[in-house]
Length: 526
Image (cartoon, rainbow, N blue to C red; front, side):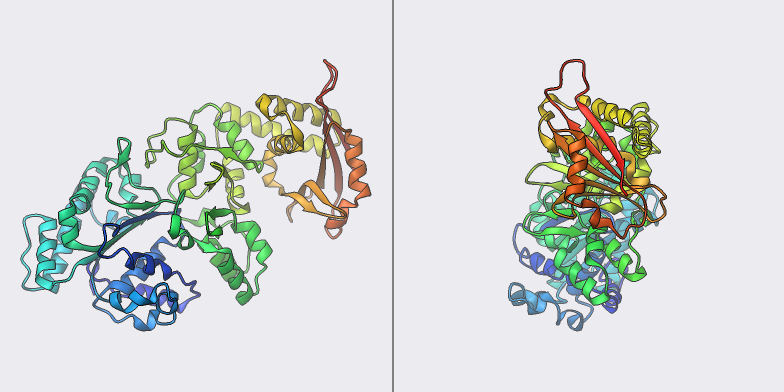
């Protein structure tokens, strides 16, 4: 077993020795592309979404120097009728070239990395096949190896975009290397049975087109039929929770929130497994090796970005155009490019049907709340201070101050949004967006006879009161308080044990000129 040529199945053995969620359908999808023009596949997804687990599985399955039948015979690829027809046909039948680009960047200087890759793979090929003579170019050596063995390669590249993200000066040389292997159809067809690349970013654009246009791309924005293999599905997480006696509702609250067409809810595998292992629901996002700074991207000076982030933290959804993104970490032209990057990094969840983004779950919301206080832009600092003051005014029962601040936030909205209770709810969440330090947010909370509009429930360590907010459109704030009592909404948190404030917020679109359209009523619940 080599380092870059035929690395074997050791990695997948260790994976199978632990708690394993069956993702071998990915192998079945790739098998269907072998011998076709669709054999070049690039799947991008956020950090800690199982990219390396997938590459180790593929190495174990295709590598001809090992026998991996015992690792796969009980899994979907072997037993599911969709895939089992090609299971034995391709099992351990290929020479595998495996490149972990993050690891390679630590072994060679940037200017020498491509030559290091070519020399290292060539050296292992010559050792494996003593009759092989290296060619003048790397692709020529690979062609000679195929002619000698009669066997094409499966190439697997993990973190393919690491040089694009971390060594911008290497970008041209690196893309030239990839084009040499995968751009010329004659060369590519002679060498490869299949190619699988995975990373965070889609393939870098050269102008308006992909720099390696022959690849079939499946980014996290539109993974298509690879959607089930991007993260854990709700069915898989529910099963894990049953097996390990975990609260599925808590798991969903903390780590659900991503979704793909035809798949439904998708969870971050790393966070789910750590919550199970440690018996603790927490934010494990900060424990990832992500080098990118969320605060740095949100600090970019684009009009409206600060307000957009406030709306997202408050639980809102924002429209985004993802088509202009250049697929790197440096080329930003507008707010949409920043939001698109945050989708690829996993900080935002994208809904294809509506073209909107949102913060997916409590884990990521905590990261945004921590981040927003690090941003040094004046408008962001102002928004955080105003939101903090609004929460304080609410707790102190300052009804006029609360109404005035809600009205000011509402006036920042487009006139098209001045309609209906949903619009008022969006404004209120945006106004209270800094709540994450002390509160958990619940919307349409089932309680008593009906659903409370908004509930801010204090975190375990917080001494603050709970805030139960009812919204009214063209009705009185006092009527909102009455509804809370009549329908017994506080019953839902009867075991909370702390103080509870009832907050009614109303909007009267027909209020006379010079009078405030928003009113507020705050009452301590006994």
